[in-house]
Length: 452
Image (tube, rainbow, N blue to C red; front, side):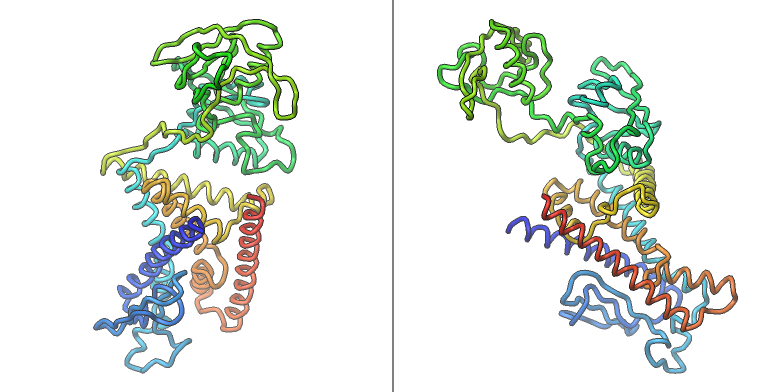
């Protein structure tokens, strides 16, 4: 219940803020162009609070906090007194109407940059693109645990998120990628990851693990948490020891210890376990004992337990000064826009699954998770959502800002506005497309809840 309420709350906060900024863009430019604004509403439905300014604009906060709107004086919607016709939206030049309509998405774009700037000034904590373990395809390509990915096909990456996005895009396009990596000794190498060999219908949300790339922060360290009474290693290992090797076999995570101990036991004798203790590496001799598992099958045991919870610490902080953060925020906005547009292109062409279309349920869940992670993560989420609102509103679909811009561009070319009949038909098509898109988003949301 707490997660549900938190998700609802942060979705309302997120959409309320971003939609308000979007509508303020329309409002501000409309006023600069001499258009009379009748109402600026945050939310829909019955106003809970309202006041009117000296220009006659009513500012309202409505009962349904999932959106907002700006209502302008327009002869196509209300009767306009002759002395106010010059302030009506439909009496403005086509360039002024374009400016008013484009101002909403532009406001969201500028907000995205501002939010990213604030995130970089505060400092974005994240995980580096360090490989914890390489298996399968990645291992065959020469990738090794401990190597950090610097670039994917020449595109620099600093975090797991950036690397994962680049790998996913390449996998969707069915082409191999060249990875520039650096190992623990700061030596650089190139690895070619043959993502084109991934099977058809692969899960696009799991490209990295399917390719055998297991990020370091995923792996639970083999940190000894407890010793069983009368265990085989009592007096040898201690709680707090980090196991790094079992009889010469490297250990990168807790789940590698069990098979290594079984192999050691089958060899029938004592072996060496390397641990880190107090910053010092120790080689300790141990002899596993044979016991029974839950199915009464014989297994080899050391008698140790690892912590069941694992909250890895961030190992990367992207932080810049106030001036240095400006170009970084602009570049990051461009990168996010290119990734978003690329994903949309792949969905339209069929190279990406329709499961990538998400709706309000997913937005609410991500908003809550981001807010729990900290202000830096929440700012990044808001920036991405603001950019998404900008891009979606610019799509040439009637009823969206992009559809109105399309009408005005046609008007510029033909020298006269589209007929009321043509615009009505466009509105009908736009509503149908929007309804289908929303239906798909809700379906994916529900599917995601069922398969969690």
